[in-house]
Length: 239
Image 1: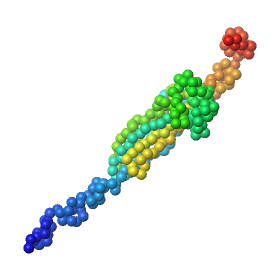
Image 2: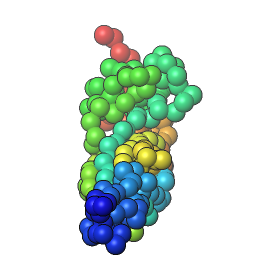
Image 3: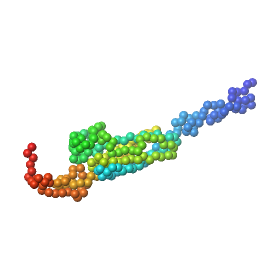
Image 4: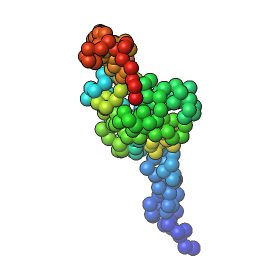
């Protein structure tokens, strides 16, 4: 009588026993610690804090920085990527059509009520997918756009706001964080930037500033604002 394969004549296993207890078996422990597993039982687990950002700047200010923290509390590495979308002042859901946006005067400032006026102002706006969109990523940037976070680790992302070229008003954006977390493949951080512009807000003043949304008491009054010696109320345009 011959011994069974992988056993001696006394019935003892003479080869390696696998994780399932089978003599000479092929089962192995996967990366998740599961015997004969396929590695799919362990996953990354993303969390993001905070889930919204608010910043206030004066028109022309260079920048201010806030932090978004990405954390991986899962069992394997978290792979992530960031993209951003920036909407103009007409991203308010009230303005559902291009004409509604124009009529509301919210292209980039209440003064600019047409697309042409926006372009003349030097702003780069596009009507796309029912929104006025800021065509250049000018006022929002992030310090890193992709990375890998090991289990139980975190990474801080610097978010920078820049109002150098912005007129007064509210600006909206989304920071979209995509990852290999099967349960939360995409997390959106909502962003609001409020820009203040100081100046004279009295339309009857010589130095009225139509871009200002905060009066600074600088208004100057005169019967002859242009200094030509003729009271302004008596001047006519003969063209």
